[in-house]
Amino acid sequence: MSHQKLAFIILGLFIFLLCMGCGLKEGAVQKEAKSYLWFTGNTEDALVYIDDLDPIELGKQYYIDSETGEKIEKNKKIHYELTPGKHRVIVKKMGTKIVNRIILLGSGIIKEIEIP
Image (tube, rainbow, N blue to C red; front, side, top):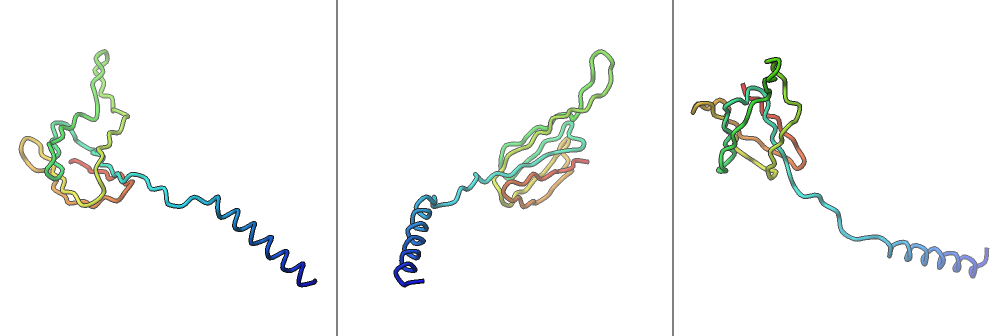
């Protein structure tokens, strides 16, 4: 192969790569940092204190059917949004601490807190 053809091929490859590189978007797409807490177990009459935030009053995980009197579990999971990082979680019932944990949450993590 002659030097002229080889130079033409290399020039063609260079132009092709240059054109393809111009279409590349710079930067990275980064989702907003969020993490979640999910409280399970006996949540009735429970107050949750997270760091220095206002307390969260948890409700029952079930309801009583008014016609049959049957106990029906709620299907919807409620997640409480927090920033990722280190958090102190305290759960009280009738003024007594029943859960006292320091947790570390990563971005996009859902942490389950079981309430006895």
